Image 1 (cartoon, helix red, strand yellow):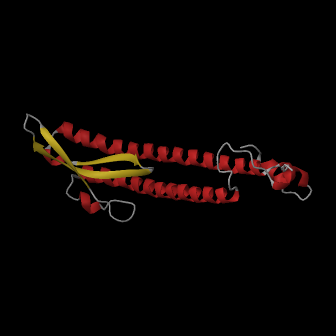
Image 2 (cartoon, helix red, strand yellow):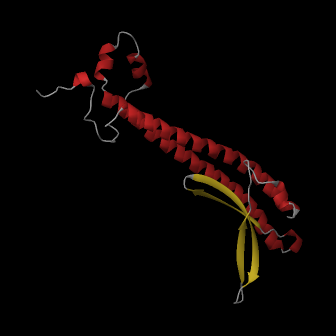
Image 3 (cartoon, one colour):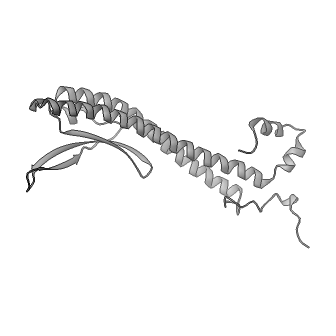
Length: 195
């Protein structure tokens, strides 16, 4: 940003009329546009941080799943999985159930069915009641964190919407100046008009 907070505070003083006069409308607009650019960058960064946090939770679950498979005890196998992704700017943490069917070759074909979360920020524990105890415990632990991350993601989404609304108001404040590089318009009294 061009001006520091202290410089802007100084311009608010009654006797700072000269400083305010030279702080033109394009300069005001650029300060606000820079705020929008910075806020967007920070919001995207925080969404990515939240996604990495969620992915670490998913890793925890998958490690338990892999351990159960390595032990090979049929009663301990879980066919529930989880994934984390960002889709259309939205952080998604989902659970699914896998089932297999013999393939025409020697292998098996895997089909995944997405589990419905329902309303709210978490999946119901009842969706996982038939899973082995280790899986229920891991899913609860992961889902506790997912719930918090879903709430955070919802707030980030609301902040992005508010930022878009703010930018629309900025466009109304500076009509004709909404082009990023357009610095041509200045305050009416500061521009000389051709005769």
